[in-house]
Amino acid sequence: MKLATYKTTDSEPRLGFLHKDCLVDMEDFGEISNFPLPNDMLELIDMGFEVIAEINDLIANTSQEDLDEVSYGLDEITLLAPIEKPRKNIIGIGLNYTEHVAESARTLDTTGKLPQQPIIFSKPPTAVTGPNTDVILNSKLTQQLDYEVELAVIMGKKGKYISPENALDYVFGYSIINDISARDCRREGQWIVSKGQDTFAPMGPYLVTKDEIENPHNLNLTLRLNGIEKQNSNTKLLLFNINALIEDLSTVFTLEAGDIIATGTPAGVGAGRNPQEWMKDGDLMELTIEGIGTLINTVREI
Image (cartoon, rainbow, N blue to C red; front, side):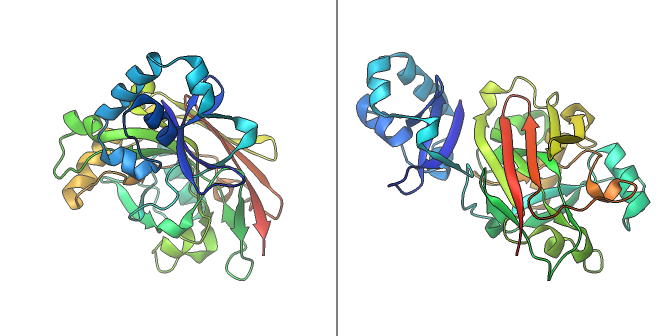
């Protein structure tokens, strides 16, 4: 199921799901199905992944006429970030594709050695922005704005010391995240100023539930900048796969429903190019991950 947070011209943010090229309002669908459903993504996740099967059964037993009554055309809505206001910082993973490790060593202050454990950083909830919004280039802070296409993993339940064999049982679904980075804002090896500025975590356009993704470790992911392909890889090349990340993270701290893990970016970032390429006002980023969709954002200088 493709889930979305959206709004209309006269509504607050609401929860919906994609069905036959329309977006069905989740709460309204619950009302016509006599099965109470929330209008917020985090509240739905809190209900447990099992609710997705129940919703699918209800859809199968609902007439198209009834669905049409609680649906919107995609041209009638504005898609927002699937989780507009995460409860906690987004968990970022650095240097998690081998070729990106190599390119970072050439141009940044990293060693070039393959990490022996996941490199963990975070982005605050205020970094999140949705599809078709502006990514802010604050020229007072940075002259080196960069892009990073990444698969986002959304946790579905609380876990501590999760085994790699059971790790995917804790996942609710997947999305796309753009780990925007200001390369000249790192401070003594600390990344949060570089990674955590407002709008530095575009996310969306959908949260795709895990039952729709047959194998999250075989997804093509690409990034185009102003129509030119800059990144092209596959999640099978993750240095630490999703199972290993969940095992490691849950050993460090408790993972909870709604937590977001940005799994790392492949090679092709602006910092790794010769000469280096930094984004500027008006640049258009298009991030695509197989089975999820395309996330589009524009750079806007202030």
